[in-house]
Image (cartoon, rainbow, N blue to C red):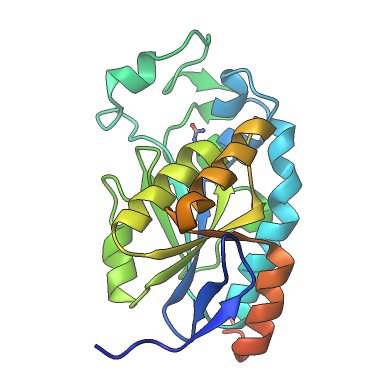
Length: 237
Ligand code: C5J
């Protein structure tokens, strides 16, 4: 089988093979439910303001992928209004007063279509960009993400979003098991728990990159500018 041309991108634990084609950006769960007060993350007792630190880097990557006409996929974690896709083990877990499906300040907690379930305005998708609703932590479980990736010939995933040790890590492991070459962007993923983020970065790149690679936003932006040709942006009407 012919090997795809790649360029070595500075990364840990060793350079990431940046491909000439087949690269996509995956933005995990940058939704109000996790990032703004009054959502699911807040209901679980987390300091949601911590997650805002990565917005500008995720935005820079989103704009770069648009500029080079590379596919972008976003996910949102959420459930159908009748909660038929939410196992009771998920709804009942924990001691918080507000549970999945309960009315909160931004509508029903973690329910698709509610104001709190929307992607934060800074990272709003453009028409035509794919947003994958997902009922689980991993973006491959009970979704059509893999169908989209296969259809578009994607082999390499740049992974960003929240939270590093939950939905981001679960998705990266699912993707890795399916054969995708995954690059986690260290300063474009965040956790409510800095020590969990640190441990996750170490885990994914341990043992020769057992789950994949990690690198930084600026490194990736420079490499994209060097190796991809800027495309005129489609006017979206
Ligand atoms: C969580 C997520 N933390 N997007 N979801 O429940 O990581």
